[in-house]
Image (cartoon, rainbow, N blue to C red):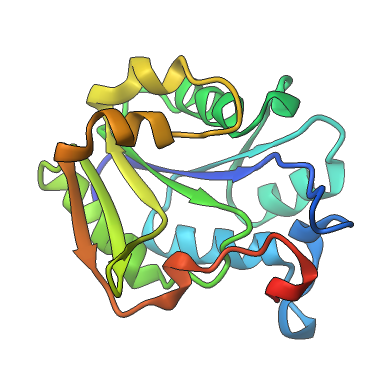
Length: 188
């Protein structure tokens, strides 16, 4: 376990492309997608903040019951940047964050452990790579707090990664889940 690393689960999207509340959609007929993503994240990082949009009471209760610290992002409609900014601001004094997306439920816990461990051992930015493609979750050290808290729009941490590309430590993993997000029912 990586000490003083905070997991962030971004779960404040509107599921517009999916056509219904995708995060509550059961995978293989059982576990809701969001709960699968949270379970994998919490298996690697005990301290997880989950960000949800106002009015998502069922989602909020589910995530809270599963052990996440749930916070509401009042301006979730602005996009992923607003959600990430809200989570980082609420995280307290941590060494870094591993940022996971609630619509990526197939990332293995051991992959998340590797990203967190890379941060804990001094990497500024860490991300898994599967067959040459950078995936998720992305880890960022606390040196990026101000930039993350200043994010807006729907790009998430992409601008921080682009501006600091030389600092990204890629970790080759045999985990296709790092590149598999669910945007539409066909992605299932």
